[in-house]
Image 1 (cartoon, rainbow, N blue to C red):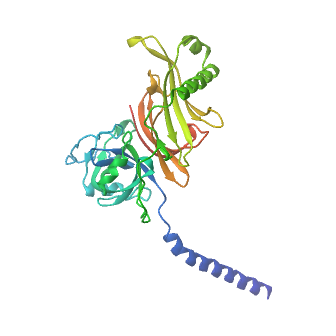
Image 2 (cartoon, rainbow, N blue to C red):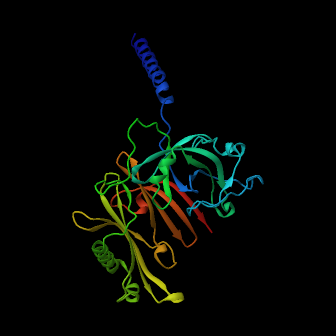
Image 3 (cartoon, helix red, strand yellow):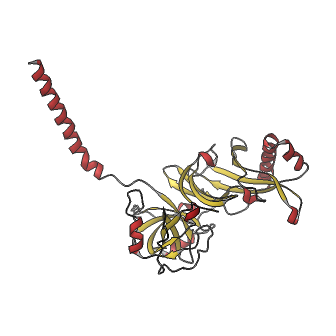
Length: 338
C-alpha cells in the first residue's frame, strides 16, 4: 500500500507542475520585449540616423547600396541606402532588433521631451571587417510632429527607444529659469565653480602623476573644459577634463591628463576619475561628454565620445554616481579601429 500511495502522490505532483506550466505559458508569451536604447544622430534638417544592430556583411553589400549624404553630426559614419530584402537577413536572429520601414520609435530629446519618429529609409555602413571592425544597419527616421524639432537644441546626439504609447498629457515646454530638466547644459559654467574644479583636479594630479610627469608640468596651469549637467532626478553634476601641456605649436606635448565626475554637495568633490585613453595631445585624449538624457525610472543616460591610439567609439551608458566609465553599464556602442 505504501508503494501505491507514493506512486499516486508522485502522479499528483507531476500533474500539478504540468498545470502550473500550462497556466504560466500564456503569461510568458505575453511578456514585453526587453527594454533597449540606441543612439540617434541628427542627419539633416528634419531627420535622425540610428544604427540598431552590429553585423558582418562579409563582402555581400550589393552595388545598388548607394552612398547617401553624410550625417551633419559626427560619429555616425558614412551611410548607404539598403533594400529591405537585404536588411531582412540581418534582423532574423532573436537578439537582433527587428525593425522595418514605417515602424515608430520614441526619440528622447533635450529637456526630457519625448517625440515619436517613423523609420523612412533603411541604411547601413560597412566597417573594416577584416581587421575586426563591425558593420552596422539601421535607418533614417523623421519626427511625426515637426514642432518637436524645437527641443533639439544640443549638439545633435540623442537616444531612441521602442515606441510606448504615452497618456494624453500636455507636452513639456521649453525650460524656464525655475525648471530643472535632466540634460547637458550648453552655457558656460560659473567662473568661481571652474576655479574650484581646477583646484580639485590639480590636487588629484599631484597624488596620481608619476614623478617625471609632475616635473614636466611644474609651474604649468592645465587646460580645462568643464561641463554642467543634471541627472534624471534633477541633481546637479559636473564633468571636467584637464590636460597639462608642455611646449607650443608643433612641439606641444600633453604630459598628463585626467577628467573627473564632480558633485557640488555637500561641498564640491570628485566622485570618480577617468584616465588618459590615448597617446595623442590635447583634451581629446580624455572621454568627451556629448549628451545626457532621462531614461526614466530614475535612470540617467550619457553619451560619451572616446579616442584611442588605434580607433574611436561613441558609447551610450547608464550613468552611476561614484563609478568611472569602466564600471557603468553599456547600452550601445558604435566603434571603429585601425
